[in-house]
Image 1 (cartoon, each protein chain N blue to C red):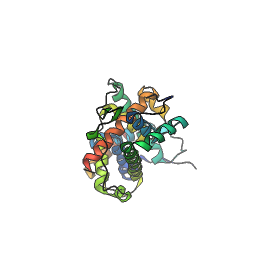
Image 2 (cartoon, one colour; image 1 turned 135 degrees about the vertical axis):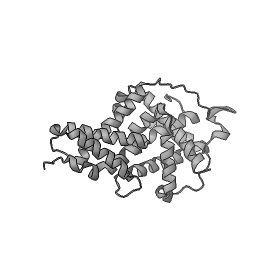
Image 3 (tube, chains in turn brown, red; image 1 turned 90 degrees about the vertical axis):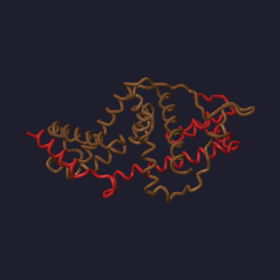
Image 4 (tube, rainbow over the protein chains, first blue to last red; image 1 turned 60 degrees about the vertical axis):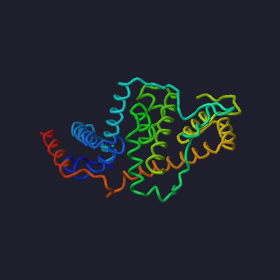
Length: 186
Length: 91
């Protein structure tokens, strides 16, 4: 089947979808709007290159994805990657090294249930926690976990080694867990 | 984090493996190390449980992007701005 492009209908047909897609990955309304705009503009420029193999939405989403990756790539290149392994969560406890420090150890999540996954407030907190991830870990986390890019691709885009990637992902998760615990389960 | 050849791993190492497991398969040795550690450590058991839950929650959140009629939409104002830009670009 050969698909056709019809830019006049783009805003009505795809703006909400693309905006939602962007905002779940960049967590910033203004930036998300810009990215959607850039996507449409790139789409118009690329009309001639459209081969009709995918439908409009898929095609536009692919452009947006690329914009999101570029955004994080630029950001990540602009900063010094620090992988200092100091982590105040762990320390020597009795005979054991690098054991959880009691006050920083995971608390029991009392109200946890699968129904919560549908809870609006909980989702808002999760979203806010992702948005609040420090930039140095966010790029990696968003591309690998939210965007579901392959590990090798993430490393290539962000110019990091695979062991760096695992450390960054781990830091992001530790931070997210802390944030959820404080924001929801306290 | 390299845990090769160790029987006993630390909590710091165990949490790293738990994190990694959310994304990738662990090697047989890593699995054994983690299993053994979890038998003895209630905090890491709790951590593992919470990580699995978090992964589920994130997955759920992502699925929502595809749903029509969820709360996040562009405002009329944003759409008008966008339409204007597009028609300028087409000229």
